[in-house]
Amino acid sequence: MSNLNLPNRSGQNNPYTQILSEDFLINAEELEVKRTKAQPRKSAIWRFFALIEISTTQFYNGTPCWNWIGCKSNGYGQFKEDGRRGAKKTSPHQYSYKTFVGPIPDGMEPDHLCRNRGCGNPLHLEAVTHEENMRRMSEARTHCKNGHELTEENTYRKGNKRKCKTCNRETQKAFQAKNSGYEKKMNFDCRQRENQNDQITL
Image (cartoon, rainbow, N blue to C red; front, side):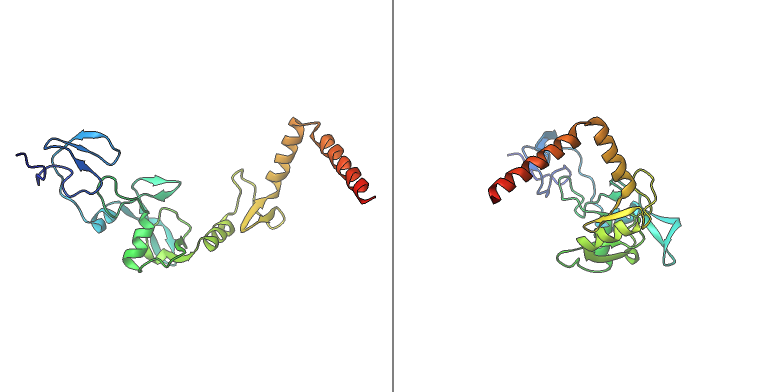
């Protein structure tokens, strides 16, 4: 009888895979692949620091940023506490907060006080609500995505976010240029609704 639990083959003790035989397994992507030589598993803290680079140019309150040099998405690092294939992804800064500060309170998330999304320094993190995190992020922006300065005169608020008035005006002008009859139609529809309301009132 063949032994499926070979200690020197991949898939052993991995809840995200299904072992088919001594030579094949179903991986986390539900693909049948060949079992390879098992690699020694490194601890989460070892893998975390292996992809951390201490910055010499980015600081917050006199302490350097711990820049993540691994995989990123939208500036945020990608990390797996459980390094096995198929394990749930988290972020380095979330892992850092839980490891060096403590559990993240329910309904809260770590905010980068240094405004560096790739930083994992626990001294640069504070647990806040998502709404507060978004508000701080918006307040920290100095220019919109099109390069207009977000001064008090050039911004308006939509919820917790600051919006650029210049971009808004340019968007409206571009829309009106492409839809020259739109304003007339809107005025006509508005007059029709007013007439209907007058008739109902009478």
